[in-house]
Length: 249
Image (tube, rainbow, N blue to C red):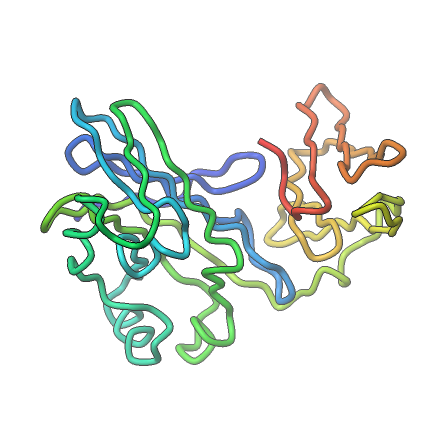
């Protein structure tokens, strides 16, 4: 099984690998995950074959039925399996997925289509449980998806690192008012520096990485819950949904 490490974009780490013509892409946060952060973790399945494929619609249904996470080295994987932090991959669900006879909702992927599972909150690796007992602060994470009776498609491996910092340890850059369900509230944007890289957080949620020496500016339109982030130097802007706690693609 071939896996490659780490590709960094403005907002996330995207790694993918291909088995046959089914491509699996794993997205994890760049930099280190803070102690109080809810990391955005997504797995996308793309159908590059000439035939239709079927996947579970909801991420909670797919996890540990059609979608499994793995770690390397094997000693790290064995530890997490023994502690029941991860579940060993099985092919038991394929007869239900492939025929659509499960009580759980499935989706047919036509050739060229992609389906994304957002595992945020559903799958939450943490330093104290996943790495600290092994006296390390990082793990090598990959996703594997059941795509046939005994066939798997694997993502590439992402290096996931953990920090000892909390979001409140960052430097406050902006405080603004947003509207949520008709009510007004305030939010604070802070900058966290880890391993020399700069990241913006809206309270405990990651916005994006600050490229180079760019200077960020912030605004929230009246009555809105969308944070607009602009940068000096012609860097593309970022929109962040405060209500959902995620950057808008």
